[in-house]
Image (tube, rainbow, N blue to C red; front, side, top):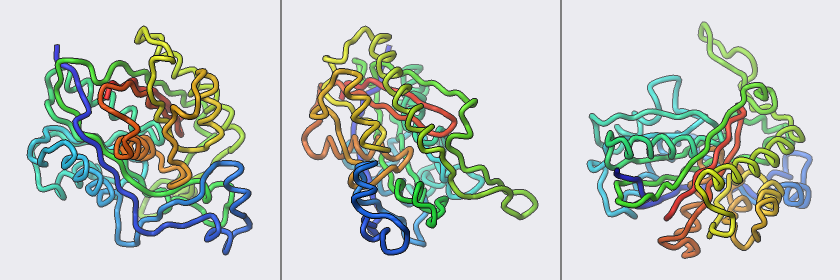
Amino acid sequence: MQYAKILGSGSYLPAKRVSNDDLAKFIDTSDEWITSRTGIKNRHIAADNEKTSDLAVFAAKAALADAGLSASDIDLIIVATATPDMQFPSTATIVQQKLGIGGCPAFDVQAVCAGFMYALTTANAYIKSGMAQKVLVIGAEIFSRILDWNDRSTCVLFGDGAGAVVLGVSDEAGIIHSRLQADGNYLDLLKTPGWIANGQICGTPFLTMDGPGVYKFAVKNLSQVAEDVLEEAGMTADQVDWVVPHQANKRIIESTAKHLGLSMDKVILTVQDHGNTSAASVPLALDAGIKSGKIKRGQVLLLEGIGGGFAWGAVLVRY
């Protein structure tokens, strides 16, 4: 049997950086209020002429360069996003066009903040089945365009960005095991309920969130899915070299690490730099960990995330 391995990684953050102090100039908030509750200090906002596919392409090119490959080597593209360029076609096909390749399958995965885990697991299945050899997996979001910038309970939390990995065939399992879950009974906790009909936006096009409800659900279920994926893989938490969590809230990340009995010294933390970038946050943190030299070849990583749906998941990786 053939397995999947991460060959390269890349990331991209838009040039415009907005600090907590910048937000305090036009909404009732402060750096202390945001930092103490979330750990977020800055977020990046896409330029008016930037689209989700543009962010994805920047990250993809960086990942391809890191892997020593060209776009023509790719035979499958999967983009995890909740903020696509348009209703259709998929952002993945737009990325494909911008990379100058054609013919290979390309599609989007929509699991919001858990999207990268869903996409990575899907790519792994394609490689293990022999249906693909080199897969470009991207998480890309422009959440700034679905935020109500007068609502301090939500607009301070999110940012824009993209992260990508290239998966290739390996004799040993680079993707060790994954566990994905969802429960639509909790959809009202976090959603953007607007839709297009008859040329009009129906419902609200802005993100809505029950903050306390999301926090409670995330702490419980991220801890549980981490335990589950380790148990199913026949591994224990002390075999994990690095946790690479969804960068949504520092307190949630700390709680999950504590539940697993792991020190925060074993957690890749980037939420302070870019806030919650939804499907982009795990690959952004992964690339940051790799490029900083913290994450090294052969180490075991636990990737995890949770988002609207609710959808959540964890993936064990041997980098």
